[in-house]
Length: 111
Image (cartoon, rainbow, N blue to C red; front, top):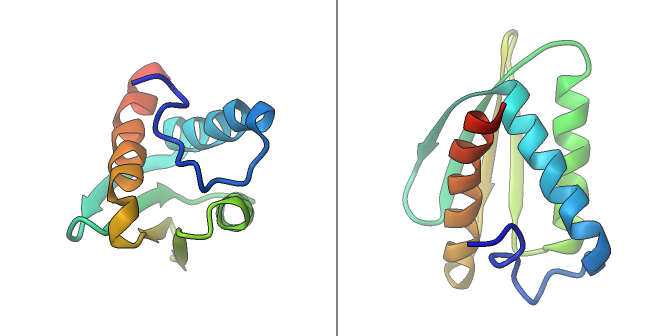
């Protein structure tokens, strides 16, 4: 699957900006991802290592992603050392969440 093949047609982010957004997610995963857990086909939880500015970075990226892909619902759960990021989608976007979950694995191997 190419880097952009999983991006749904409903995404309103300009095509030329999509590789940059994917790179932002990959960088976050490579730098901060501690673990993931899947709570059914429509929900994914990311556990991200905290640190100065990380919560703001996660919130900003999630907000921008929701702006172009409104089918995503992001919920941040900050803790002292770890930030939980819950990601949910509707039934018709399960494949997009599957692809995002797969990227968490491959991004960690690229770091």
